[in-house]
View 1 (cartoon, helix red, strand yellow):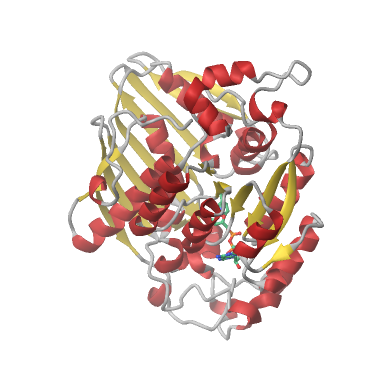
View 2: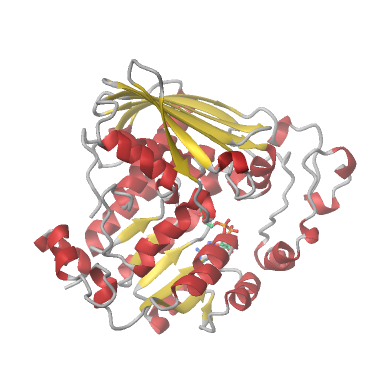
Length: 452
Ligand SMILES: NC(=O)c1ccc[n+]([C@@H]2O[C@H](COP(=O)([O-])OP(=O)(O)OC[C@H]3O[C@@H](n4cnc5c(N)ncnc54)[C@H](O)[C@@H]3O)[C@@H](O)[C@H]2O)c1
């Protein structure tokens, strides 16, 4: 009996209790395993090669074995395989990899527009799935994943690492403790700095048919955080969005950045060949598939928004006021919850680094009709504000680890987060509010169902 069926049959608590290993003290499947989990990695770009390639083997090789690497670009695959150092076979064909190497779990780190193909094929051929966000880029592909999960009954985990930083876990805990009562409205505003947005615009992220726009590629993280904090599901979205500075709005354009005629006057000039790793992984392998990593940020194909804003109504009545302002001189976010018993505010300046001494502690402020109570959360090291290592421990080291804050996410969470972005895109295009329930056959619930 697989773990999912076991938990469904007996209840998660019983499963955890029964599987505690007296020697390691670990709970769940890991402790009970005699062999390492067989992993196949699909998509060997920077994310796959780094977090789920090299770092996975460096930190979790006692628990997992990389049995195959797959990428449609044979040149990138070769460079990635050397960097990861797994010593396993490589494949440009997914089916062949699954047939020959029999991975138990596929890690999906391909570009967003192909996630659904890999997820569905993987399930059909018997694999569980760990997929990067966004789950997929539109409602049709989302429905195909929902249908396939029902049909094949495999376990799909969406790696919403933004739920795991200790600072956000603290906010979730305070909300769950009822410190501010029932949430009535949320203000959530995110800023992306020039260099971050430039990296998006240069790549496929700038083209809506490849990354689903920042509404999906980036805001999926933010909408998932909102859904998780509010603990309800979105029902209706009204949005505005615009492209102010990139694509056809730019004053000139070239083929790509490294050899452009406008380098001296372009504020976004960047030479990929100055970065040996990116040159070897991407530029040296362009001739295989035409994947250009340093495209012009003013190319006419860019059709996404660089500033957007939405109001989201939740099934439990909460209103979310959300904005993403990209291409500013600041990166960070501000989130505030107004509840029936008070207000909780959290503000994060940029990506905290160890040398940012002012970010050693990040405050959460609570206002209950008296002077603010300030709760200081210590700095956590590790990728994405310290969230990545915590998420990976649960994924690879101890899958049975208790999850009291409900941080692990599945298909339903992945769908609900992207559908807010999909609805926002439609709302802008059609100038009307869009109902989430009209997009797939998942109907929004007042209480967000827990992923088990
Ligand atoms: N959670 C996070 O914080 C976070 C951070 C970075 C990236 N990501 C996600 O990780 C994924 C990968 O990002 P990246 O920056 O490495 O992208 P990338 O474009 O650099 O790499 C993707 C790789 O997938 C390959 N590919 C595309 N379609 C494929 C297919 N059908 N089969 C096999 N290989 C295929 C491409 O050739 C490329 O090598 C994206 O979905 C992105 O959204 C998440």
